[in-house]
Length: 561
Image 1 (cartoon, rainbow, N blue to C red):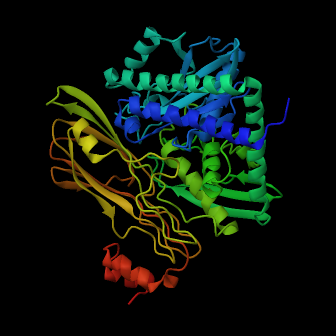
Image 2 (cartoon, helix red, strand yellow; image 1 turned 90 degrees about the vertical axis):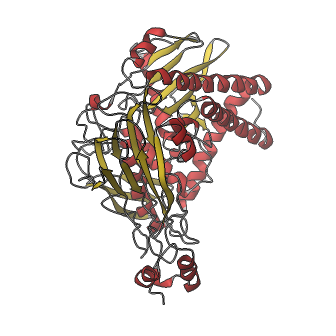
Image 3 (cartoon, rainbow, N blue to C red; image 1 turned 180 degrees about the horizontal axis):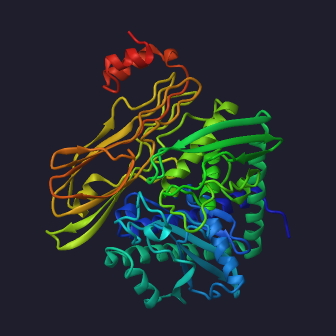
């Protein structure tokens, strides 16, 4: 086989990326739920037919799914091989959301479809979408005090939801019988399947044009180069072991913090991540399954080295020791609803806190590190129907060696954005009384952290139940190299005008609300970078002039004036 020339390799790399990007776009455009259609809480990718390893992923997909979908696809392949899952045929699409089979939490539902060429599976296409409800004890699935995964919702092993291109009515009926607002799920299901079919069509076009052998050669070469580039970046890091810690507020059941203890050993051109010393498995839903833990390390390193092309090769020099006996290696039946959206970000924060010691010019202080999961379920009497609203929100990013942190950025693990207020008010019986930058929340530093978000939602009609699984309520995002921590998350619920702060600060479930009751949230600011006293006085004065800090805060935090 002739060696690929550089131009053809580059074209095929971009073409594979474009396949995934079109799948992402199709998924969002066709979905019914605002969390997918507006917030883009989804991802699509191409995976190896041999072992499910990542070939390409959409640039607009959630980074946390980078590692997760390759593990869930691998599981599907293995279960088919040993007879635990029905063998595929053209047009089949499998559905799976089991956290312990290469997943995250139950609300992240994955579809996987084999792509055939000449009667053989060439690759798998897979995607993940966050369903706004998957059953369980509370609307939205974020049960803050669950003690077993069954309390969190419907758990699906890999089963064929589509058989030879036709939706299986029996499987679909089982799903609908176990979730809330089931009549709305068909829109998301059809959108998720349509994204895969678009991907198959576009991929076949590439294969027809360039030939299967050429594309296979390109995939192998892209993987090799990604590994080589990551190794080159790692080789430039000083040899040594870098330690850090990050903390989860609580597990939602026991009101004590959980510790993520990390040691990163750099030797030659590899990094070894060891989480020994982290807290033991917890009673509540802040356990992390192994696939999510691994993916959290991968996405953190993607933040640090964004120039490395995305494929399984980029992960080869990253060795993660299995954190057995800790809450970062959850086993059935541990509850896990907080793993993907919250614990994953604490893991990434631990990686940042360790690596900023080795790469101070490349790594930021800690970002807000919470997806701000707020689920509201109830009945809208004006429309005569039930609803489940899921709100995610951004926060401040950490400062770095060159500039201040980004304000109201998306979560560390994703590209998801808060759904527009106007869309939420149209879809649900709520009014956003306040939606603004959270002034003063950025951690002080030579380069300060970005600011979080402050919003307040009022229930307009009917009765509802609110649940929260957030984090960084007890500890703010870490500052780096002398920078101060960002402001912690805050949640206040007003019932009959009386303020209620959850005992676990960032976690509570099933709070009954009625018309006129309100929920107020302040998301964390990013950590500061460097000594605050070294901040340019003109920048401090500008921040005061813009209302980011008061004059008193400027004096207290930066020694200004």
